[in-house]
View 1 (cartoon, helix red, strand yellow):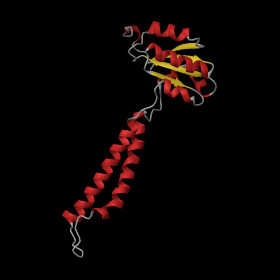
View 2 (cartoon, helix red, strand yellow; view 1 turned 60 degrees about the vertical axis):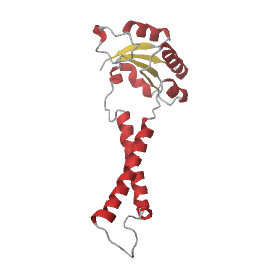
View 3 (cartoon, helix red, strand yellow; view 1 turned 90 degrees about the vertical axis):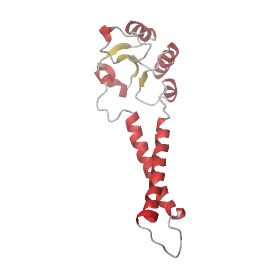
View 4 (cartoon, one colour; view 1 turned 30 degrees about the vertical axis):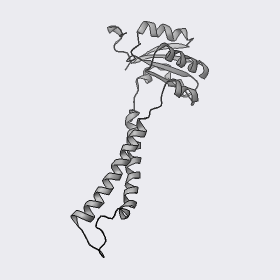
Length: 182
C-alpha cells in the first residue's frame, strides 16, 4: 500500500498517549496490524517496549567481532613483518617469528580495534550524530521528556496509508494524532 502522492512529504504519524500502559498497548496493536517502522518515545524506560518495537539490533556484535579480528590479524601481521621480514635479528638461534612473543601486542590491539568498532558501529547504526529529528516538528513532542508518551509510525512502512493509519491511531484512544513532517 503506497501512500498517496499528496502525503509523500510526510515522515509519519505520531500519536500521543497519557500513560505508559496505553503506549505499550498501542505499540503491540500496531505490530499486530503489520506495522514495522515504529518508534516510541517515553520520559522513562519501559522495559517491554523495546521488545514490542524491536529496537534490538545484533549488528553491533558482528561489527565488534569484525573489528577484533582486524585488530588481531593486523597486530600479528605487523609484528611478523617487522620480526621476520623487514628487520630480522637472530638472537641465540631462536625463531624469527615467535608467536608467543606476539601475543601481548596482538591481544591489546584486538581489544582496541573491537572497542573502536563498537563505538563507531553504535554511532553509525543509531544514525548519530543527529542534531535534528522530524519528531521535533510536532509541537507537543516537547512533553515526551516530561509526562507524555508517543508512538510514531513512519511513512516508509510498507503498510502505511495515511487515512487508514490515522484512523487506526485514533482508534487506540490517542490523546492526539499529528502529522510529522521532515
